[in-house]
Amino acid sequence: MTERSGTIAFVASETPEAQAARAKLVERYGDADPAAADVVVALGGDGLMLQTLHRFMGTAKPIYGMNRGSVGFLMNEFKERGLRKRLEAAQRSIVHPLVMTAIDRDGHKVEARAINEVSLLRRSYQAAKLRLSVDGQVRLEELVADGVLLATPAGSTAYNLSANGPILPLDAPLLALTPLSPFRPRRWRGALLPDQAQVTIEVLEAQKRPVSAVADHIQIDNVASVAIAIDRSLDLVMLHDPGHSLDERILREQFGY
Image (cartoon, rainbow, N blue to C red; front, side):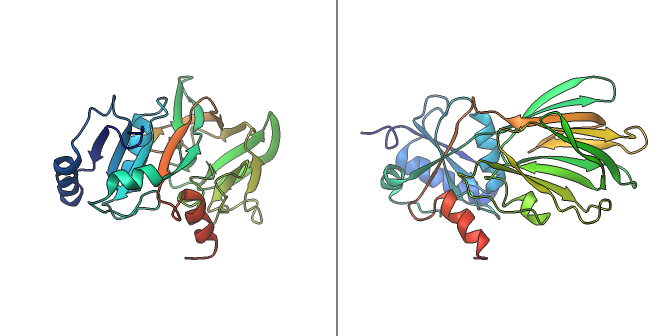
C-alpha cells in the first residue's frame, strides 16, 4: 500500500451536498485523523480547498479536492467509487504561498500568507492612492485606483482574471501585479514581475483614503504599507486527476474553455 492509498481523512464544507458526500465516502473508505492521514480529501468548492491548504500549511500533506460546491477550478470531479485508484494515479501540483507583512496606521505589524493573491482595497467612497515599489525601487509614484493585487500563477485565474489580469502558467516564474479599476495613470494595466521580487505598496493619504489588505481570507484594515514576497519555505501539494492537472486547467482558461 503506497502513501496515497493509505489512510485518508475527509473534510467537507457545511453545505448539505458536501456533508452527504462525506458521509458516503467515510462509510466506504473510513476516516483517519487529518493530522495523521497520508492524504486529505476536501469536499466542497474552491473556498474549502483554500481553507484546507491553509489548515495544513507547513505539513506538505497532499490535498485531493472533489467538487461539491459552486466553483471548483481547483477541484476534481466528484465520484464515490474508485477513490484509491484515483489517488494512486493523481498528479502533484506544488505551489508556494505569498507572505504579506502589513503595517497599519498605528504601527502594528501583521504577517499572513496567501495562496491566490494579496489585494489592497479602498474602504471609502474615495479612490485609494498607492505608491508601488519593486525590490526597493519606486516603479509607480502614484496609482489612483480602487486598489491593486499581486497574484501567484495558481491565483491568476481567480480575482486577478476578473480584474483583467493575465493568466500565468503554473510553472511560470512570475507574479501578476494588477490594478483594480485604475483612474491614474489611465493607461497602466499592470506588470509581470519575476517571482523572486519583493513588492512594497505604500498607502498615500492613509487617514483620508483608508485601505484594507487581504491575503486570501485574512483582512487587515487601515494599512499604511504592505510588503509581499513568495515564501519558498512552504510547499503546498494539490493532487489532480490525469488530464485535469492545474497546469492543464490554466492552459484551458487561456483558450476560453
